[in-house]
Amino acid sequence: MNKWLLTLICSMALFTATAVYASDTIQKGRQVKVNGKVLDTQVEVTKDGTTITSTRAIAEALGAKVTWNAPSNTVEIHRVEGKMTYDDNQMSYANYVSLLLHGTYSLKVEVIGENLGAHSDTTIVFADGYVDVPENTDFQKLFLLLLADQVGELPNKRIEFWSNKELAKAYVSGEYRVDGLEGWSGLNARFGLLTNEGGSVSLSHILSVHERDNVSIGKYKPQ
Image (cartoon, rainbow, N blue to C red):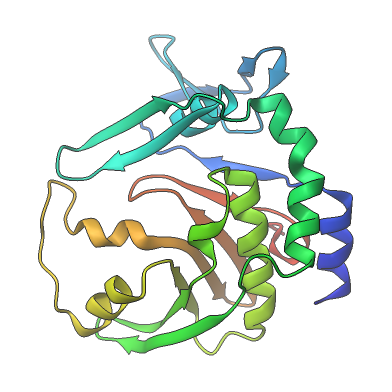
């Protein structure tokens, strides 16, 4: 493990910039607080005063589970009884880091395919440990950081991380079909994207077809 990454893990702090896909926004800088805590996510304001931010960030801060229903084109939010709240998540982060460092979550990766047709610069990688990570975006991003660090030098300009091996294989072979308004629902098995464009390396945590967080730490911090 690289020295810079170990230092970041031990500091137990993740700084991210959430990509919010919206149009006609005119103002930035507004904040959203949940139970007195400012959310670390991007907020924008439209001309009519509507606040636009990440549904996932707000829901998870309130202890809810967020899922994407591709067939119905719906973001679904469910309150889970006994699920950790925002404050509880912060206190349990140290325990999660300890579990990661002790190998509780598998960091094994397997290359499924490379140089795919129109995406000739892309490598598809399957990581079996992601599905075991708690459903908390900060925890998932830390896991993704470890995977990206493990991959090392990019064999291609883009590496996509997938959590489901069979869906990754279907994507590589092209043996899949559109099954919803948003296209193929199997694309939701993607959870990370590592890119290298002109020497600039970036890492994104993919939350759904339309939502992703840009990880901005260390070598992944925008220059």
